[in-house]
Image 1 (cartoon, rainbow, N blue to C red):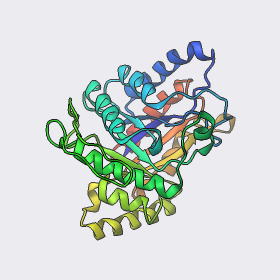
Image 2: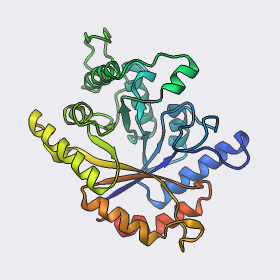
Image 3: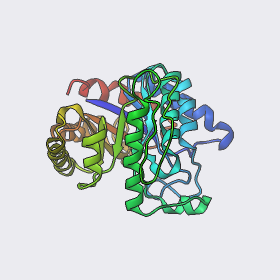
Image 4: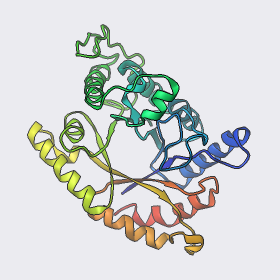
Length: 299
């Protein structure tokens, strides 16, 4: 079992002037105690399930560069990238740059996106869902070409939406055969089919029964395209974890979290991602590092 910390809120004491110092301490602690991965959301406004729309939110790729500079071992990525925010070549170049500068620790997380409010609010197009799925599939196809060989395939691509003419990627990623690609979402007809065809990991939401069913559908898609199901890492995002040593303040004890995550492991989860309430209080991360991570590492 692997574990990932998602930093989903940047509402820290001290406001903007102290935000960088808090984030540095958070990610250093998570890296030191053994988290396998560290993630930020690819949003420009805070999302409704986390807080008010005007709460602090950092741009994702820039934040990952900062996180990469302050960690040494955990892989880092966007959970997950909104496909219409960047063109395919920018997605691949940004992921490659992060991978090179961190010694091979990047994830390329992608999804069809959903937050119309921030797109309209900041003045960029929010295409219909069907178009966003076309954008996602063409981006995945372009990524396959750009991650080939020592400097990409160098040939062009003619899709319905994108027509790049020279798919150069220099320097090439350190992670081989590519920066691992995670696709977020549990759509049974499109999203999980794209995972089977193009991705290295699937990320779905929900409880044990729900994620197990989604992964069985993924298995069927893999069989349909001739892809070994076990090549794809099964990850799940589990929301905000409120953990305290004794369960005080309405929180969960580490033992309760271990039991709950054990059920997800039984359902097939290999990588569990979650946020931590009041994550700036890094003793909460340290508590998980001394309880959850060592007890479930070999689960």
